[in-house]
Image 1 (cartoon, rainbow, N blue to C red):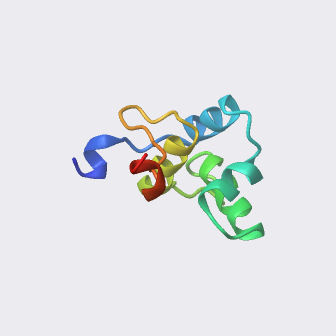
Image 2 (tube, one colour; image 1 turned 60 degrees about the vertical axis):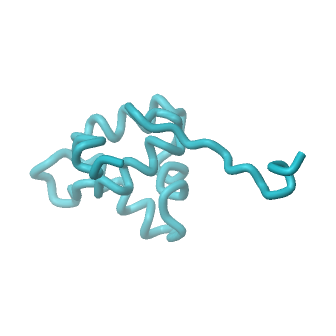
Image 3 (cartoon, rainbow, N blue to C red; image 1 turned 45 degrees about the horizontal axis):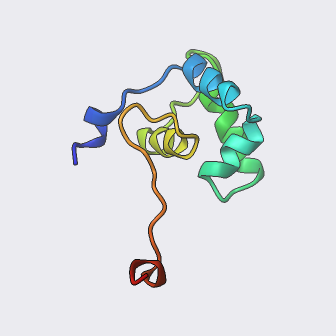
Length: 91
């Protein structure tokens, strides 16, 4: 498999927001999909959508962005699939 930097590009804050909105998710819902933290995850996600140069901006890590895209079925080249349980494989 190719390295992450070859699979996916760094998104802009606007792209993060637009992708989340296209998935009909709130910032809290998006944050909970990629982080077990509650309040801190929401604040972190809000930072991903804050325009560059503003006080609370933070770039979304590529691994978090890729996981989010996979979970909402919007990854440009990969797709999640459910793994078969051992019981299903023998049938």
